Image (tube, rainbow, N blue to C red; front, side, top):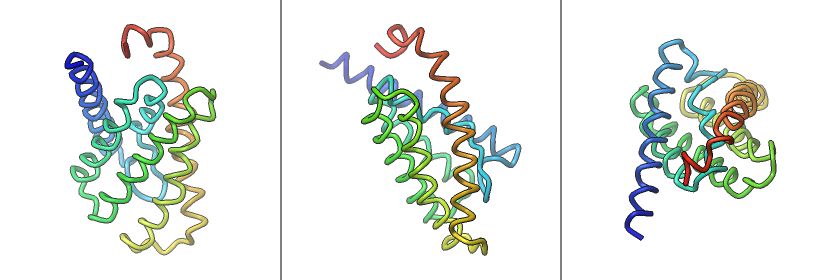
Length: 161
């Protein structure tokens, strides 16, 4: 039992660390925040398909990323909760190919536009922000995430025992 707990914690920690590093890289190129966000780290949102350890890993990774990239408190809180909701949805839909990519997209399309408008004062309409955030999420999760899924799927038993 202790061995299983250690593996779970290790996987969650590695996923959180990867999320932070990938967000930091995207932030260096100005892609991690704003109206159109293409966070490379969001491709990791498919990982709950392979392990439930990805759920806390993604949440903590997003939380730390939002703190380290200078987000306001409402973004840190609600953005991280959106990632948590998306990760739980992905885990619940893990047996449905491609559909498992949709919960992170939906969660971020609902939450992030409201955060952008109310926490950052972005003047654009909520529906417009939902479209732009959704476009970035589709690129990050549905396209890049599915590519990552295809690469990891072959080695899933060795990586995610």
